[in-house]
Length: 161
Image (cartoon, rainbow, N blue to C red; front, side, top):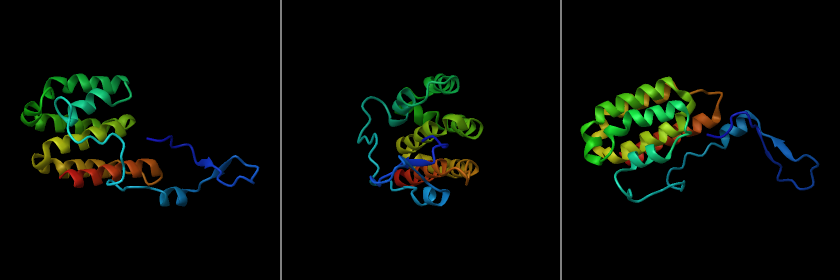
């Protein structure tokens, strides 16, 4: 997630003496981009070894104590795609609990959740309502970056289901 305290960007007007231009709240909200078909960061067609979710848990994160603890808690449950399918209820309950209680690594956790939905596909429908409610509880109207992240991942849920 971008730094929520930065409210300026480089001024595109070369003749101005000011290097940065203030961006108001309305303009920041207007600049939110939730186009999941044109976003191309880390788009993989197929997982290289096991599953999209397992790779996201291995590669993503900010390496804080909470994220590392979550990875160790999920590690025995997500080694292979059949294990993920077998332990899906436990994995989802752990993710929902962490999503509701630890907003510090929400973007990494949301990406992992969308990749879990991509792995589970039709099996994820039973958990979709719980994820949607949890994500709606995270909405903070004063934080456009969080809004963009949440709505982008909700759109990814719809795309993968």
